[in-house]
Image 1 (tube, rainbow, N blue to C red):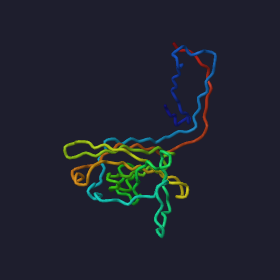
Image 2: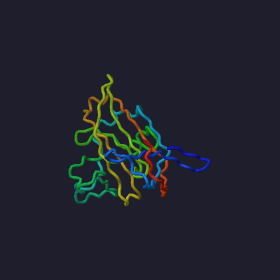
Image 3: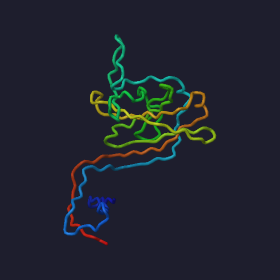
Image 4: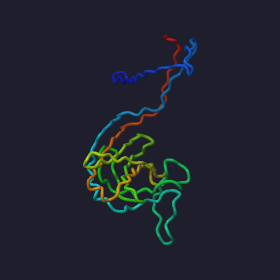
Length: 211
């Protein structure tokens, strides 16, 4: 893809083939259309995150997720409910940490908003903003002093409209006990985008076989 700022033209390279490998039938037409463009993409890979993991070697506060048990009688229900991005009843979902203040921001638009233990696993929570519009995302891992890597699983949640707009979170879950955190550092690959442009652009062209 190329962008000509002087003319305001975007050029796409399209390669077309038939499903069975037969020659493309000539004489027909094809319409290529674009409804959304995600621009200003950035990738930061192999980043060492400035977060002292031993500061979060204790149980952390968890959030109310849809499908979970409501607070006991007399306990005020939280104003925000979080929904599992994988759908379903939520019965099989892991707990989510309660988002808080920014603990670190390894990439612009991807702050870490919580860390600590829940259900025996060490959580690192990343706020993705409205991921349905920018697709901001990351992959995290931990390394010990010998360079051994600890990989994780992730769970995704998002806020509903009652929270004033959608915000996506991902909790990364590590099976690392508290006594091993002292020798570990956090690392990640981070991917962000700046602008989502929406519209409808299309062009129709004749089909020709170039073989």
